[in-house]
View 1 (spheres, one colour):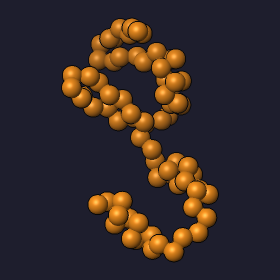
View 2 (cartoon, rainbow, N blue to C red; view 1 turned 90 degrees about the vertical axis):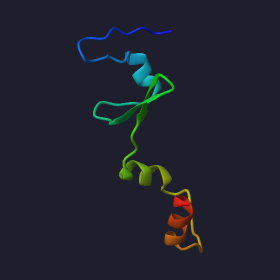
View 3 (cartoon, one colour; view 1 turned 135 degrees about the vertical axis):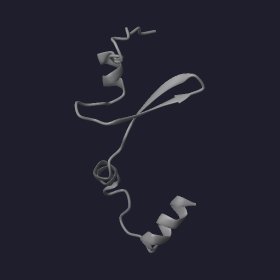
View 4 (cartoon, helix red, strand yellow; view 1 turned 30 degrees about the vertical axis):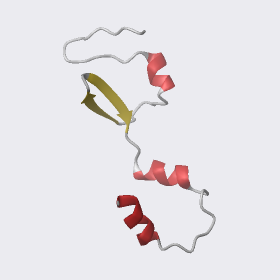
Length: 73
């Protein structure tokens, strides 16, 4: 267990947790309360998402709009 001390309205996140989460300076995160626990999750930008997926699909006969419709279902 790693402890952190609340400083006014700020709660510093220990460096090793930041590193394990893969966060870098300037990254944005989403925070929410789930079952009494604070959950911090990185926000993936559209550019990051495209970069990660690049090369995953070589070619496809599926219409991209159909993929979007399936994804949103």
